[in-house]
Length: 116
Length: 113
Image 1 (cartoon, each protein chain N blue to C red):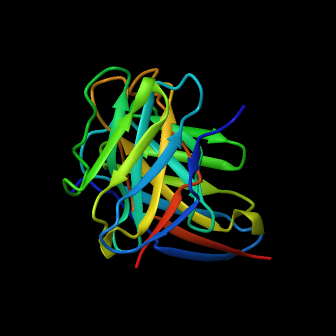
Image 2: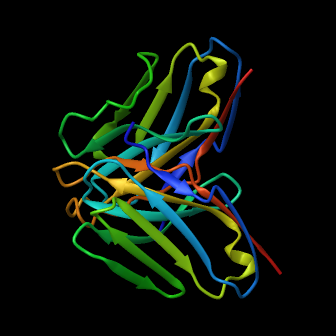
């Protein structure tokens, strides 16, 4: 079946502009995650959604970052007033949410964001 | 920081040799997972070991978990050039059905043909 898809695969923007990154999780997966991977920080958790529960936003680095998940499926990560330090690969993952001991997260190919 | 540590940071071996990577973490976990990443893009899930398991096998992969030492190891036997990639351990946390993953810094493995 289809895996997690993300768009765009690459995004180049100017400092100060807003960007939207999209994630389509695997069909039937109730949990969706966003991570960021940059050279200096490795892989960092940003936010996750689980069904209709309030999202865990504990990893968002600033209030310029926000995310939505509409209809329990597609998610959009928005970065406002982008800064050069936002340049990174943004990875989305989804999981079946069968239980904390066995939950496997499946990752998309990522969106490489470059802020000039 | 809860982030795990991996060692070595880089490993270079000849095809056919075994590769061992280690991961340590700081807080209690629900599970520990290993991922592979090629060319800095998508992560491929390799294996998940639960906190109450000590060893798990999948093909040429063997993972051990020692919760008393808060450490895990990934062994790749009979390595191939195609195993060249970055390998990350990630620990699962949280009391609900899901939870964020905390990643280690990764080990870059090069397998020379």
